[in-house]
Image 1: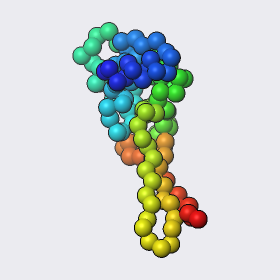
Image 2 (image 1 turned 90 degrees about the vertical axis):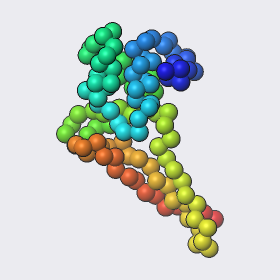
Image 3 (image 1 turned 180 degrees about the horizontal axis):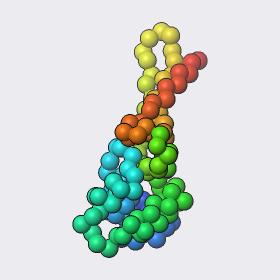
Length: 123
């Protein structure tokens, strides 16, 4: 939770219990979460009702702490912008190229994230 609070403060924003709890929930998973997933994680905490969770998700997205992912069934999932979603591999062969693997912000109905691969020549 302290990490989520620190991220909100570093962005120059005011942390609240709901904002910290939701950002921590989203940040502690590699999978994108929908509203129901977040509600299930926070269900023991009676302070956060359905509307509060929706409002905080919108607030987190508006302030670029999370991004929205449109799924194949036209629902939204959310993933933290603080996670490193890009990896680069530099081959050691004579033919030099930079391979970038990036998780695309598109999920199918089961929540699987598609991969984007880009190759760039290195001079």
